[in-house]
Amino acid sequence: GAKATSATPSTVATVPKVAQRWRKSTKQLITLGPASSSVEMIEKLFLAGADVFRLNFSHGSQEQKKELLAMIREIEDKYSHPIAVLGDLQGPKLRVGEFSKEFEMLKQGQTFRLDLEEAKGNNERVMLPHPEIIEASEIGHNLLVDDGKVKLTVTGKGDGYLDCRVDVEGKISNRKGVNTPDSILEISALTPKDRSDLEYMLGIGVDWVALSFVQTPGDIDEINGLIDEHLPEGMFRPCVMAKIEKPSCFEGDNLDRIVEKCNGIMVARGDLGVECPPEDVPILQKLIIDNCRTRGKPVVVATQMLESMIESPTPTRAEASDVATAIYDGADAIMLSAESAAGKYPEESVAMQQRIINRVESDRHYRNLLDQTLSEPENTPTDAIIAAARQIAKTINAKGIVTFSLRGSTVLCASKGRPSVPILALCPFKETARQLAMSWGVYPDLPKAGSYGYTVEEEDMFDYEGPIVEQGTDDFDTVLRNACRTALRKGLLSDPNDLLVVTAGVPFGTPGAANVIRVVPGAGPSCWDGICRIDDYEE
Image (tube, rainbow, N blue to C red; front, side, top):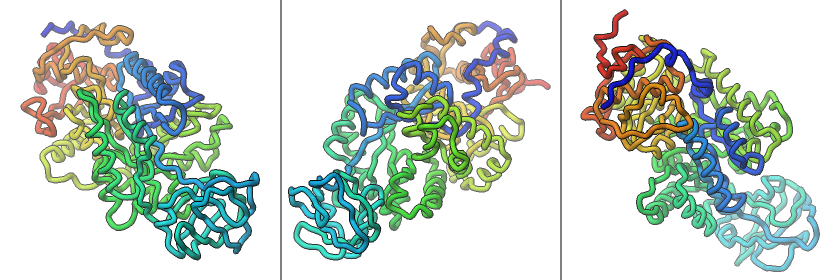
């Protein structure tokens, strides 16, 4: 390889202007929409803290999503930092039919029938165009209309109809949603629209796919099968995220099996809060987060996080507290929906989340809570090495842990241990690097070439506009030098004596293996010559 020029102190001291962005461990998943569809706005949201962007396929056309994706990739290139894109599938929407009047007022205790007849509804009946609901409902089951504003209890059931008693009275009007908290419906979580959207996502190359309306582990098998079937030749397989929004996810060992089968989980509290009592939701949130952390899968807390910031430049105290609680619970990421997609203050709401993250993460209670809830390392060499690296980093006060990972398993393992320093992930595949952007404390580097090693002159390293792409060698020293450079470029190192703890699998590039730990000085001159030997490091 080319001989590196000796580093001038000035390059070491100049911290890139986006460095503050890489000081936080909790990730931010930001929904794009009408309020955030220009490249300028997306860049502002990225700089304010967005790590993953969510494209919600419930709204807008497929072409719009492709344009947004292109804008995100443009910003990713400009800052040479991987950004994940999550495509969110709408899932089945169950609704009542239409009424002849504008609305009907249902009274407490009256009877109301749901049937399959096309005629417009009145005060006594309405069409429910979903035979599977009528099929699955038993006497005594509850049905919730319009997010629970009207509650019905099934009192009788016949061929193609349900008779119900009105238990919570209220208005009912055209095409309002219906929730079935008590029954598992015999329908797929993927509607024809979702199948078309999924195929489109696989074609444009989203990094994550989120599945709504997950009722049982079988739903995850179904989407995995579809992905296997429709993934275009040469495209990278996206990660699958299950949205937990139905009570059936908590029956038996369903939750364990769902978490096991997918790559990540979203706590969709909006829908969960309709179907489960509101007081259960915070407890379920903790339960899901603990389950995911035990298995080292990223978990996102979503919906209504800063709801009032859709209209107001500041959140309520309760919302700030809610975001903080999700972080204290140990979530990998927190999400914004309408706040960033359709609200008046998209940038402010992202910045607000980042402020809360920084505040909570600097609180000693946070560290204590994380340490108390760590699961024991599994008895694999990788887990042992990662646990040791975490301990070493803490003892010598290192500035970061560097892990090399082919498919991301080593990095997820490091993230699961919630170390007290950032995890710098170096992967040869851009796609893996993007998928890892969802995980707690992980800052992946965007690989320049399909190789870990590349030899670029010092000055070019900071050239965000025209990055140089060079094939390098997979020689371990080159790789270590690159690790140091990346840490420098992310502003994790500021002093030549700052230390990094490096873990890698040897022979270099063995998938899933980490069996070497090296401690390297971040910018010592000996390091830039490619001879990063620990014994060169003198006090």
